[in-house]
Image 1 (cartoon, rainbow, N blue to C red):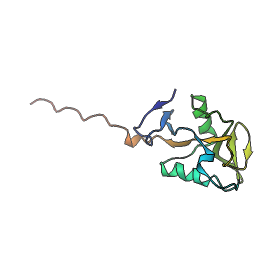
Image 2: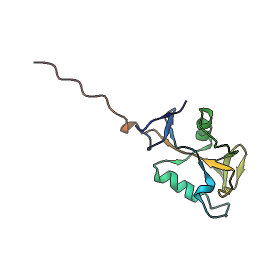
Image 3: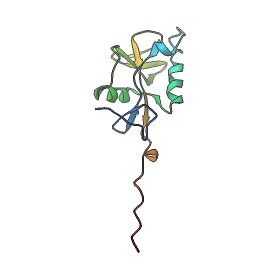
Image 4: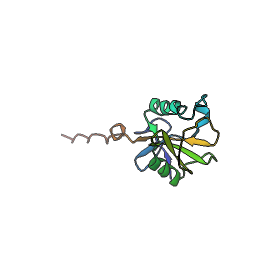
Length: 127
């Protein structure tokens, strides 16, 4: 199951198997363009600004297999590409068309072990 963890993940992200995941979001909430081949760029920027990236096909599969929500939507946008087409969980390779209301996405990041808390130093021995 996913747990809400802040240590080593972007704020508000969930952690599973050393990968941090954002909450799922509707693609149509992040673009105003109807250009299917270019209108997913704002989504990539959202993930980058959070210190993450748009989940790959495998990362989205991990997210969903461990309790992540699809928001009731059939198609999950990923960063896995074939030419100028994205892999969509629930479908195939297809033009982004992120303005369509039947798509969701999640951002993903590798957990930053360096920002995890270190154990406290040992207590000095009494003299």
